[in-house]
Amino acid sequence: MKTIDPCTLLLFGASGNLSRVKLMPGLYRLDSLSRLPADMKILSVGRQQVSREAWLAEIEKMVRDKFYNGIDEAVFKRFIERNHYHANPPDDPNAFQNLSKTLGNESVFPQNFAYFLSVRPSDFAMIVDQLAGVGLVDESKYWRRVLIEKPFGTDLPSAQALQASITKHLKESQIYRIDHYLGKSALQNIMLTRFANHMFEPVWNSEHIDHVQITNNETLGVGDRTQFYDSTGALRDMVQSHLLQTLALVAMEKPKDLSPESIRAEKIKVLEAIRPIDTNNLHKQAFRAQYAAGKVPARDGHLEKVPGYLEELGHDSVVETYAAIKLFIDNPRWKGVPFYVRTAKRMHEGNTAISIRFKKAPVELKQGQQQNWLILSIQPKETIKLEIQTKVPGLDISTRTLNIDGPLRQPGDESIDSYETLLLNLMEGDPSLFLHINEVEAQWKLIDPIVKSWMEDKGPVHQYPAGSRDPKESQVIFESEDQFWRYSIELGGDQH
Image 1 (cartoon, rainbow, N blue to C red):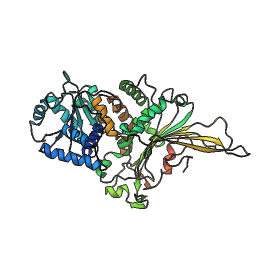
Image 2 (cartoon, one colour):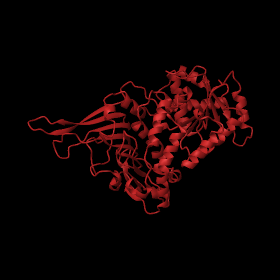
Image 3 (cartoon, helix red, strand yellow):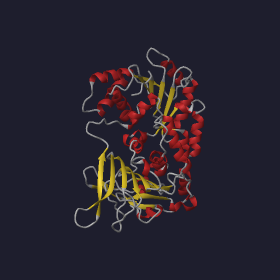
């Protein structure tokens, strides 16, 4: 367990949904696990004038709504006493000077400051500029860290412009770019599965692996986010961030140690080694589609009729709700191995998984014999699944697939939300689960040419019925005819 310095955590946008649903309940959970230092304080920064008493009543509702099965009253009393509120009206020219005056009370607020900016991305640079203007990011005496959440720009130029704006005042070591996906325990387990088990390293390369699939599918549609989604699309929303980070954990070289700096260095190397997309042959490397009207599984188990994306949007659009791309990593370990990355809304099932297919066995006893698969399931279940070929008992020599399924979560294990992990890492000063600017730039450089090509192509986008599986047409990106999309609930390999 790492030691955390006495510090003040400042939550900008404290009255927003993220704070109510994740951050405040998460901080209470960390306190209940004795992971917060005794003299740590939380200062919520909001636009409205609210008394401390009224704000503490709000926090109590946030926590009790989350932990309706009961809370530890002694812990809750300790947690409540950590909390303070500061009004930062957007129309007050002295707002940040007043914030500095509030924080200057050293008898109340420890002077190491961690800022969590749960605000619109367009406000990141302005807030950093204002904090710097009153000396609140200066590290001459104490550490000062600023956390911002994706998206980090909408393309490479805007990401670089954001970087230029905030690095006028912050060193790279002060910037914590959060991708909450990286806080998931099962995702962190990818690296440990690889490097804590000697059996995997000898076969984790192009000599033994046929291809890798990285999947994030949802049964949900875009909901009330139609305008946001139509300005973003599946590629920028999921692939550019979450799924390329997942790929980096799967494909990176073993770091020299488990320090944040060593882990980051290897992730950056592998992201920068991904071969640029050939936009002249884009149809063989990338496929997009939109969901049409269909039926999806409802909570009660029945199928629910849902409208198509264009019906929800109310006008024509070429923005994708399904994106699948083929990537190659130009280094010795992965030479020639395709990485298929896909994400979609309104599919027949929701799952996030890494599926690794190994090459054909040296001995094939029957035509069409299944190949070995290793599947690392992130959600809805955290499991490791392995498929091997075994002999069918009897007089004849024949094989069948044996599925070995090992749940990562055992009875009694802690259930920790990703934001709890990342809040703790911020206060510890551990940046290993946060993105370095070099990672952000490498990811945008890869994705931007695809987005540009797709936006310039105004032809009709392929439609797939809501609640269906991957469109058959998506198989155009596969390197060989025997490759097919894997699904979380079907070991054994069901082809289209």
